[in-house]
Amino acid sequence: MTKLTTIDNIISDRGSKYAVSGAPCASEDEAKALIKDLCRTKKFAKATHNTWGLLTPEAPVKNDDGESGAGMVILRMLEREGLENHLIVVTRWYGGKHLGGDRFRHVQDAVRIYIEDLRGA
Image: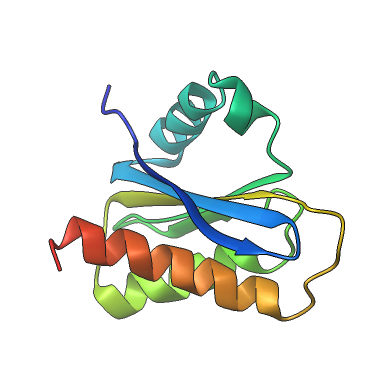
C-alpha cells in the first residue's frame, strides 16, 4: 500500500495546529485504509479532526470528521486542480478557541501547501 506524505506543523492559529497528508489513491476503501494507517501514529490518532477528500472517476468522496464543511473545501480544490485519484487529508488539533470561518481558510491553505509540494513548486 502507498504511504501518505505528511507535511506537519504548517499552520498554527489560536492554539489550533494543522498538518496535511496525501497519497495517490484509487478508491474510498483505499482512502479509509490510508487514514487508518495515518492514525497508527499516536499524534494523528489524537487529532481532533482528520478531514479528507478524494476525486475518483466514479464519484467524489469526502469525510468531514466533525469539521463540518471541510471535506467539501478539499474536494473543490482537488476539482480546481484536476487532481484525480489522490487523497488529501487535513488534520487539525483543536487549541481551545473557536476559529469560525478562518478554519476553512486554513483547510484551503493546507491543501494549497500540499499541492505546491506535490507539484514541486
